[in-house]
Length: 188
Image (cartoon, rainbow, N blue to C red; front, side):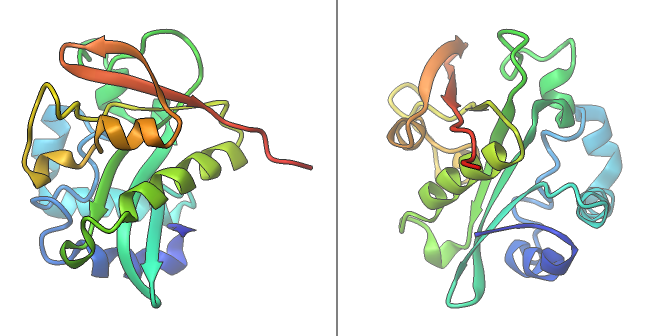
């Protein structure tokens, strides 16, 4: 696992491929409002993520197998994500004022899916957030018992995966659970 900094940008581009992960999203769907996401287009979205990386903001983590990037997990402070902080946010709204970090997207290379890459990334994302001072990490996974989905809709992860990683449900936003895990402070 490694945070995505400038030296890892080529690996991220290789992992995301021609489609920019999911339909040229470039993992910016949560970063931008709906209007801004549409107006940015695929190049604008790629440029936004590239700029974040160039600025040293580390928007997520890459997983590697035998030196090749095989998975991605977005993780960052809640205030980074326009879709979550907008006054119009419904499904992804905050339930309190607690400063949180959010895990909101996974992308695993097709030939690596089903092999536990996302679970390893989730554990690493919590450790990463904790090492950056986060006290709470949250996610908005899909509850497959209530909302069976196909693989492309699982980019936010599944409730069962988050529960296995020690997250607990604290609220429901419609059918979408809000789950949280307290970070253990890094040892000195």
